[in-house]
Length: 171
Image: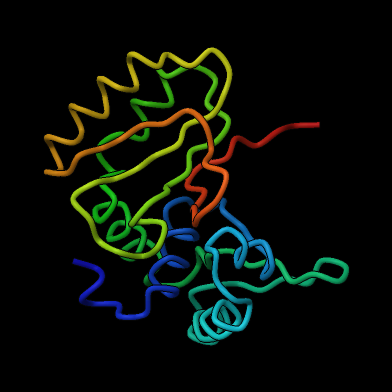
């Protein structure tokens, strides 16, 4: 669906990263590592999305931090499109209420590479997770969105990933 509309796999991954959750941020090198892509490819797309106003750029010491521009007039429609594409709009609130102390949720596999697939691979990490509930929810949600959802509880040692949720820690 989105792959036909947005032909750049890197741009698609960036839109997913920044628009799945408005709080997601990233630095050039970190994003390149996360996506398993070159910094040049990431830089090109970050610059285009920033120039179009979809992303904000903020200098922090020697690094540049990127985040979604929530004031952009198309922020909400793009976020809804990304959520619909991932099936996120159907599950996030319910999962966070009942799943335990979720620290991080990542997309891995085809979607993390910007490729559409019949399978959504998700890694959930945290404390006291209700794994049975999460597996049950994955099956139920998979039927709703016509995709197989695979839940893993350990981050893979290699390959692309996109962090779609990260718990904020207070000092």
